[in-house]
Image (cartoon, rainbow, N blue to C red):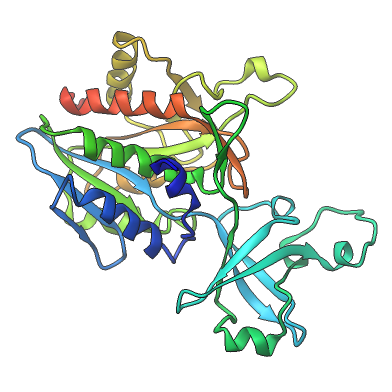
Length: 341
């Protein structure tokens, strides 16, 4: 199994990023010795260079759930970690990970569905239940209780083409993979680069907010994913299609990205004949928001890839979009732009 698929399989919901961070450190060590984990849990990797200080960012965490209560029979009620539509959770397998590392399997349902009743309304978060087949006392002996994290259990795989990857946590293990590949590929650089793998993006962009305190980049690129819009009645009007290139975010619901950085990225894509899709959306935001507003303002943009079924248990992504994003950022680092306002 390749590194991207291994990253997507790791169980690391927001607030519990230890496993993915440990994996990344293991992969980084042979290529870079200058790294640290800050007090909040962000992983910061430094590749020294003589040029401008640059910050590349991807978040390690994924969406998931957390146990809110347990009945005597062991039936759990849950709260969401990150933005998940309850309908996307139905009949999903999950894994409970205890503090000692024990893993317990469960299935998400509702009382009505479990009883075989007709479903007349879409489920709400408070309707969701998790059945592990264990009683409350059995769960307690296994150290599972209120506050235990639940994560979707999905093995990453390919679909009809080996280039089409499906699995959980594409958001944002794809970004982590891109940064990891850049760390491996860049031997010398015209930029002084900080690769920052953040925590708790899905619950409030918190890792980005804390990671910037001890850094002073001249500009930043956040590497994240965005919702593909190519499966709908008017798919030909979509602007974020799988296999049609990385996405450059011009605007999201909170952020107006830096036009100078955007122009440089568009010029690289044109020069290298790499397809590039522009995104303007009124949904969601990323770590770029917190970084752009830090230290008096840091020029920031978002380069990513489109993903189908974002914020669900099974997402779909195209490898060619990922590889093209790597090529663009690698060129940007080799020829760092002079940032204008």
